[in-house]
Image (tube, rainbow, N blue to C red):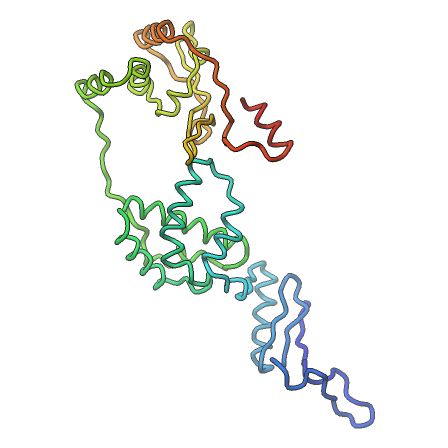
Length: 305
């Protein structure tokens, strides 16, 4: 298998007359022994031949298994890795990206951003968890912990870490939100909420109660999504807003389009609503309110509307 140790201070072949190895121009400068020639592994220098031999053996074994991770790549700080490598590659929905960025830049980076990836150990995670719970509620801390786990998993994929420290150090449990059983509104509460809305928006409450739609799905419905003959509603899109308050269409949560049966009384309410408030044409960006920056994105946006 490839891989060898180079002596940087002495020439490889001895002098023919003296039988001794002559000094190189690098004699006495820097670390003497350099490990070279392992495919996919950056050269590394050592002060002693013993250290070089040990590292060469370990690196060759790990490289052969496809498990080699150069510890120098893990010397990058967590904040630099996030800002330079992880975040630029994200493709989240604008509304999701905004909240994620806020949590990471307000909590992860200030608390452990200066720590090199390779130095994130159980102690670091315990301190991070304790500090985090002093700053935010457990439910928010749990979401931030999930973000950190995702960041470190990407570092493993990028071969900056051999294993994800969050998953390795199982003695440090992620924050857990208090379990709360969902409680449905009473009829009195639902009627009170509905009555205090503008008349145009009261039907949104009917859609939530009768079809289980989320707010964005209710606002994203069009009249043609109702098939009154069959008695179903096609949930094809939702309306969302980015951090600047700009609306845009996208698929329902999780990309799960679906058909929902509609009861006769709700169908009658829908028809009455459409007579009272005739639909108006509305063209919005698809998935991202920012103007497309490439021809492919422009054609993709026009096909999706």
